[in-house]
Length: 308
Image 1: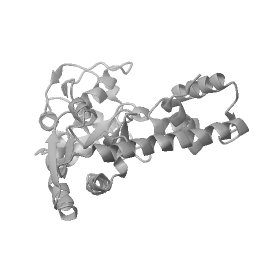
Image 2: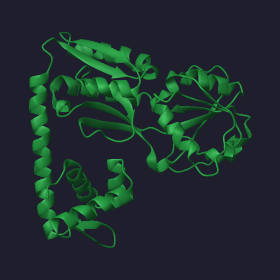
Image 3: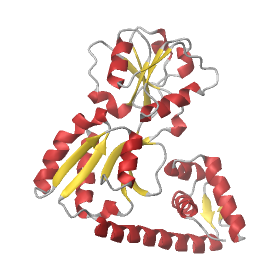
Image 4: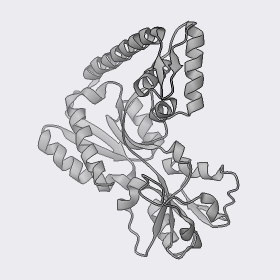
């Protein structure tokens, strides 16, 4: 029997949080998925690793031993990728960054300016395209860092989560459903059950765009029956059409400052709040500790705060 790195990460996350629900959120998995993984691990090892108390789950003596080794293995794994990353750094003085078109013009000017002040000897090359192309370029070493909306952490990469990305429905202020939205604790916008939009026409994005993955989840909600659905590659255009009363559009929360809508529009969080993706910086495994990339990550984090 051999353990895999996913099991080790699950084990350490549960040990860190002491709570299945919180650990599952941290790992971007469902609570049943985490529970089954821990149970399978206990079965494989032939021993109980955690016991439940009134408020939390705590490691058994056997669990403490396994957790200690798991942490050491994960630390060594991270250290190995960091050493490899130092060897794989491009000989030319260039750092290559990719993100979506909608965030590109919003973030890159300030980032390039501030990065050049820190590292005038390094050229900051930028690229914009959709998520699948960004991730592929990063894994093939054609990019050094990407900023993306991520469903689940990629175990082949360092994933630096910045903020939760809510899916927003855009409606004109006089739409009847606006009156049915609810204010919920800790949400930056009112929440609207997508079923309140039954029969409405919708503008959605093409399948290769990340936001489409969030939109597809809506079609699976029981009782939701959309009207006509039209595809467009431009979120900005979709929201403008919504402001004209021609249908419902969607955007991610961080995209709002990149939109140019002339007429009044209202935004509502919708969909399943338990499966909210994250705005994430991704770099090859171990590279997040490299000084130049670490500086770039710090600057990007500061820029992302301006979107909130």
